[in-house]
Length: 102
Image (cartoon, rainbow, N blue to C red):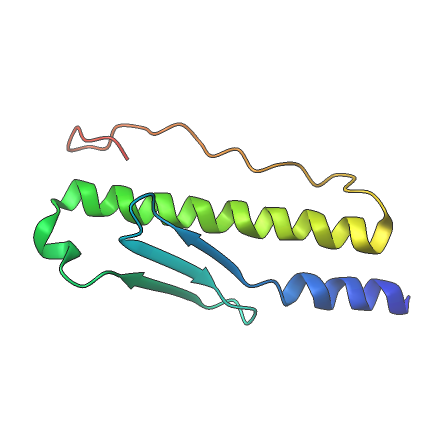
């Protein structure tokens, strides 16, 4: 049972980070569950709303993928197998009400 406790602690302590492709946005999921978003100074002024949203979305998806990768590593380390831990596949973008893609 102690191994399971250590497993849960290791999963809780995952710190995942994702960056947008141009690195205008960095999203970090802290071990306490807090989500930090850093936006490069001047980005909001230079990019359109849709471009900023795309940068944030890309960084969030990268953080989710990083968390999943680390989660699989924890499962392998504790159980020797990534059983039931699948790779993260981001969803396809969908049009919003304004007609832009998100």
